[in-house]
Image (tube, one colour):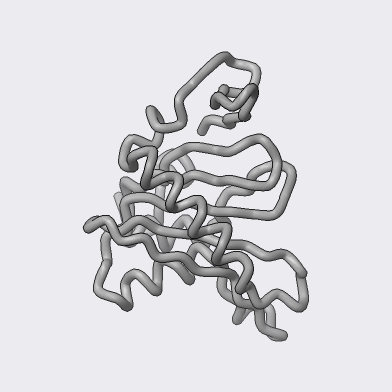
Length: 157
């Protein structure tokens, strides 16, 4: 997992020198990464979050290049809420796209946030080799892979 900060407009690995985020997220082009980031940020505007007031957006890139964005949707019975990441993945599957190449997660925070364990496990089902990019309102992003975030997913040996 690499934390990337934008210094002088160029991506840099925090305290470790320069790095291109696309070297780590090789499953996506620069244009696709930009489009995924925009879709995730836009999706967060539709979040239904009256309990946490924490708007989250996610966008997935399907194996055939379609971008599908979604937001978190809360419920008064908090366990019935759904994270933006799972919402985006499930919408992709419901539209006939069961293979995910990449996921971008947007949070309105100073530092990027990674997907929760449940979202990581669901992504393992539909995108075991997926690139995962976490962006925020601050100057950093995290560029990683699902394999790095979830080394031993349930159901695999």
